[in-house]
Amino acid sequence: MRAKIKFSELGRRMLKWIPNALTLCNSLCGFAAILCSFRAFETRLGGGGCLGAGADMKWFFVAAFLIFCAMIFDAMDGLAARLLNAASLHGIQMDSLSDMVTFGVAPAVLVVMVTESLYNWHAAHPVFVYACSAIYLGGAALRLATYNVAAMNNDGKKNPNWFSGMPSPGAAAALCVVIFVMPGFRDFFKAYPLILPVYAGLLGILMVSGIPYLHAGRFLMSVKRNPRRLILLVLVILAAAVFRYNGVAAVVTLYVLSGPVTGIYNLLSRKGTSGA
Image (cartoon, rainbow, N blue to C red):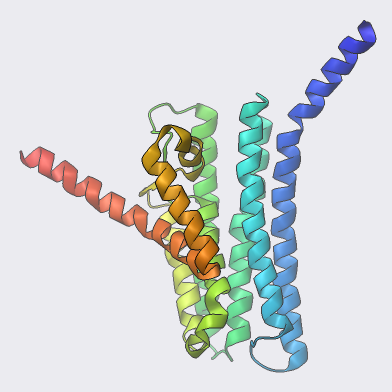
């Protein structure tokens, strides 16, 4: 009987490590994405030319795909923590540290490596790219720190269905889909060295802006109870299945734009109420 009790206690302890294991997988995906970014750049240097459709582009694509895989682990660790009642301050800190690697450092490195591979820089151009990437990285760090403080203080004043500012996984996804659709827009390769860093900087600002963004995880959990959300989810899946990477890019871009649109709507609504 004692052996069974001890085994049961050991089993419960092991189950509570499942969320941490998933979080660790998240960080490992981010680390692998960074390595792939450097690998792509080294391949380009070995070829002696700018980015094309060969092995260099493949490695950048793999890096972006790994960041998307990390998003799955990020969603799963939170779900596992709730199902197993294994939420803890240790888990919160570990989750944010992993997110910083995967959704902060890895996308910033990816932007720098892709941009340098696409263009023969002028003297001032690296400073511009580094500055934009630094804005993104700083925005991710501030966003995750703010989220940690709110989680530890158990701030009940905030609506759990909405984020204040763009979540870091959403910002990382927005940069990754740009990499996914690049092969279909070869005529714009010369514009990417300007578009990609600027976009990264804007995403960094959105992360600390306080603009409301829908909590995708809670949205998915409530799909069964809300027919409208179920229809929307089906449409998103169909878009991804039919249009593949372009469909995913469209969905992610709509999510990026949803924040400013929601913020403007809320602002106008408040003004209309106060005016009445």
